[in-house]
Length: 127
Image 1 (tube, helix red, strand yellow):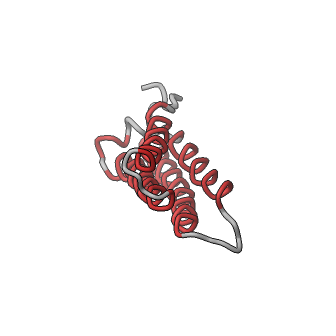
Image 2 (cartoon, rainbow, N blue to C red; image 1 turned 90 degrees about the horizontal axis):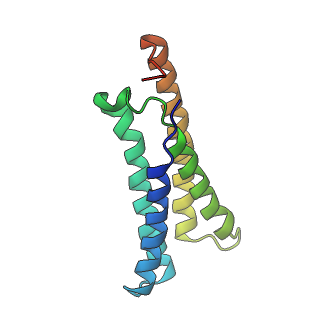
């Protein structure tokens, strides 16, 4: 089983660096830069779901690729863990919570799709 951590880690590092770039170079507020970064992270995470699960050409190639789900779940969980203040919930906290739930649901759905495909076609784990 091959697990590819590289691109998902690079995507998260890119989002974090882009957030810093927006704050320093473009002079956006922390909240606005964070919102843009969270939306960008959601787009990348959605690409991880829709790419391999909807595109038939990528199904067998990405059949055992579960690492991005762990990376994005840990990323959104970390955003919430370090920023959530129950009496002062911000727009970014709500966005991160929705994205965390979406990533968990997507991971479960992707795992279910994998299980159905594996039973139907017996994907070769060595290829």
